[in-house]
Length: 488
Image 1 (tube, rainbow, N blue to C red):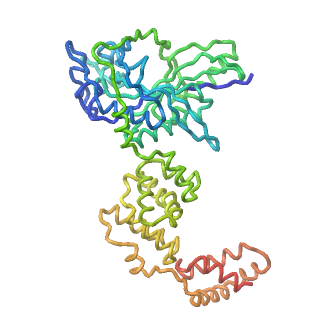
Image 2 (image 1 turned 60 degrees about the vertical axis):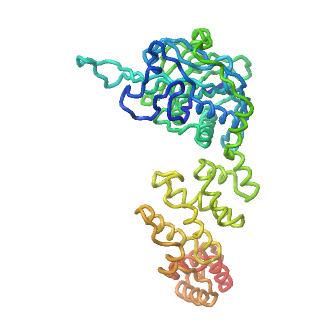
Image 3 (image 1 turned 180 degrees about the vertical axis):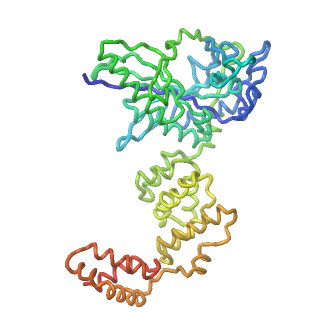
């Protein structure tokens, strides 16, 4: 039987605020256990929640970026369940009327573009954390502990429609969403610290069947690799179970990355199990058009807009445009280069950004935001290659010198000073190059004979010898032209 996979994702995005969503306690990561939980987070009697305005503005910003509707009035509700790390016995969330309604995100999988429809995005508070491993009780016995530092941390839960049909699509969506929320500045995107976590709802159905199969939810996937592995395993598990005559049970599952398998955690609750009702301590959230427009006016250009703009204006490939918009720091650096170099050198700038610059950052474990070199260092290098002063090979050597100085803490040289001090100016004089080529042809007569016998590879060998003889300073284009002329 042919099976169709149905996947929907719920992503818990920690909003980038200094304090929690309903209290003034800090959200800083890494603090000592239970040092960032105030009376509101602890649910002490008589305390009242106060909504964090910046968390709301982050939600509005995200909604505008995905083309969603911003609810003029939204309601906070109590989601009731009992778990040790939930001091109140309920979570404050949004249910019937969320702050963000609808919207969509475009993803690319291979050569295919697909639009992922979003259902909603709602504000809520995070729970605390149960600590089970390596926790010792007061009498030395193995125990579990509760850390309430995360309790009350502001989250935006982003929910898709069940429109993804493979693990690859789910990962592409998660990566695109991750890039967007970091680009917007609403989330730091640190998956190791729990700032971006995905729950995957997975089901299978016979190909052509309209009714959905029974879904299982895989909780708290905090890496793209784990997301892909968990979904792939769950797909295989469900198909094998059904084909062996079994039945898929709706439940919540966890992924074990060591065993690369999912395992049952608890039966999956439905909405009625949580007994939602409006929180009597919080007024409805009212968002007027003036507030929305004030946020819209501060929105940065979005990655999709820049990608299309740069492809149309500068003839960049889709792949290069994707790389240049992977984060705001990279895009900003490219835009700074454009301001210095102008449109004619846009492709040359893109080539440097996606080539040597990107690979150097990658080897150093850095992002563009961490780069010790900026546009004022890179632009002269690109200019000197464009005007024929130096070759690409020499430019790479100069870049390495600048990078080394930058890492040592002080850039003492300029591109022009390095060219001058090391005598790196490209040889473009046809007479000088002609003499050099004659010498190389005379010393490599075997290659000359091979080329004249029809072996094109011999030509490349001769070019290499000329470049070697000139210590990389010969103008490659002129070498090619003069050498062919002499050989013919």
